[in-house]
Image (cartoon, rainbow, N blue to C red):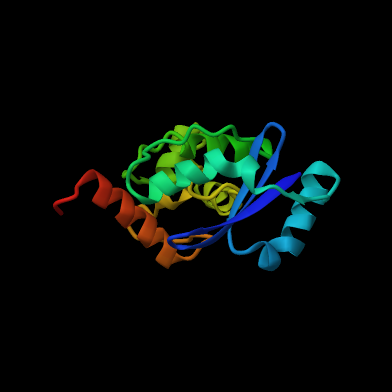
Length: 171
């Protein structure tokens, strides 16, 4: 499994990839996440051998850089999702939230045809292993409140503000 670190405008990001695609994009340095990522890899891949390869992530970093410049509205990056069938269903629904828009947990539950699974959607959202690219930051409370974000509410605010500013530069 390959990994790299990249210093984004809102903090360091660590990425993991298999030969099939990006499987993890987390806020934090490799050093701060190494133990957590070892456990994750042992659970989902039954191994945890990592090799740093910055060049393997050149396209991902280029698209993320353009995203932070307000120039990339959709990502063209192969993903490999590891999670439960329900989590994957939620994460796939998150990919359909347009850039600069938000959806409530209830709207996501309805979108996956499980309207009573609002809390479970929140839990799946919290377990999203591919931040930013799978836009869990675009999910908000039914009352419009910015609730829950693994990267912290401040980062969630920054990402939503970035997207709004890119779409509506004069506001």
